[in-house]
Length: 124
Image (cartoon, rainbow, N blue to C red; front, side, top):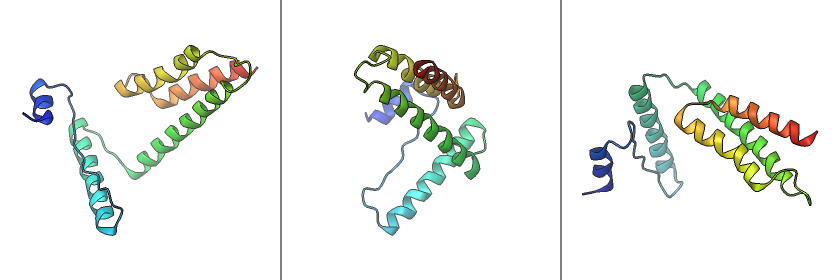
């Protein structure tokens, strides 16, 4: 029995999608991967009854990039000779937004606000 069959049999996830990612970046593979992404988007839209647009993808990329920028600032604080926060406190800032986002109970915009508030408190 293959892993895919086990996942389906156990119903571990309501959504599971296997995507083929080419290893070589030639023109044929780029076209193939573009089509793979289109199939993924179509499957996501069908499975979750949503519409995914180019604008929504761009917006999401901006939000995640901003979150990464904020987290980089948190990491920079740890480089000080006397860090204003411990490693456990850093985990308290960075782990919840990622895990909450994964299960949908908090959006990245809210996570950004939490990180910004933590940074403001730490840099005052």
